[in-house]
Amino acid sequence: MKTALVQLSSGEEPQENLKVALKLVAEASDNGAGFVLTPEVSNCIASSREKQFEVLCLEAEDPFLKAMRALAAEKKIWLLIGSLGLHCDDTKERLANRSFLITPNGKISARYDKIHMFDVDISASERYRESDSYRPGGKAVLGKTDFATIGMTVCYDVRYPHLYRALAQAGADILTVPAAFAQTTGEAHWEALLRARAIENGAYVIAPAQTGVHYVKDGKERCTFGHSLAVSPWGEVLVDGGTNVGVSYFNIDMSHVAKARSRVNSLHQDRAFEVSK
Image (cartoon, rainbow, N blue to C red; front, side, top):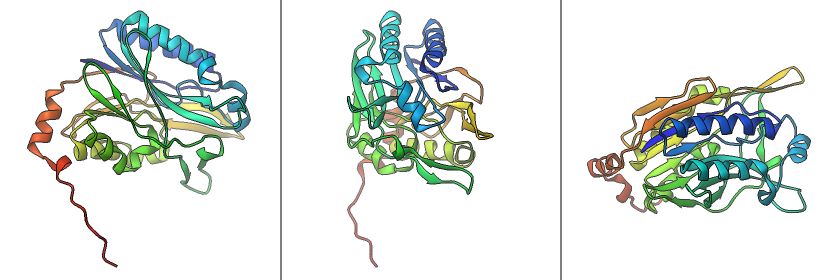
């Protein structure tokens, strides 16, 4: 299965982001990819909570989702929309960070709301509070395709290995980690975390990412790390998207999942234990 990672640098206007995403997904399909993935918040990275609530939509009304579903149907591809920022309900008081698995006929096969919120103080000048706008999800999700079972996660989830263990033990062959990873933590942790999740679970880990400068506010730039990665079930980096907007390609061979799990069968050797204090 030829697979494509679409790397974006989304800004504050969903319609402008959609134009770029449609172009790159179509390019990926035209180059033979049957499975295409976009990053976290493909539709919008906004400079304020007020801007987010102004430009984002309910799922049923979202033009970004509608257009991407139509393109998947036109191109007959499996499409993972890494995530979209969406209003949760008609009150429009909270947002969901929601990932979608789209079938080759444009149907929504699975949806997953990001569980773990990025609430961190990286430094005195770099602080994030995702929960100020977004409502966390509460359910792990498996997406079924005709080539693999996919465990759906988003970005900061990658720091919680028990989520990936549960997905793999429930049948996931591929773990998706669409992201808008911060520059500082990306440089330090991105590749190490993704490779660890692949090795621990004997699964492909596929992580399309946002990259570059998204906006400038009060003289400070909001930047993301880029480096969309695909990691094999044995922990090898198969492709690195670098820091430019564009498409990267690699091939999925499901026999590699079985081989990795047969060589090291730790996925099925967990033991209960107590912590002595």
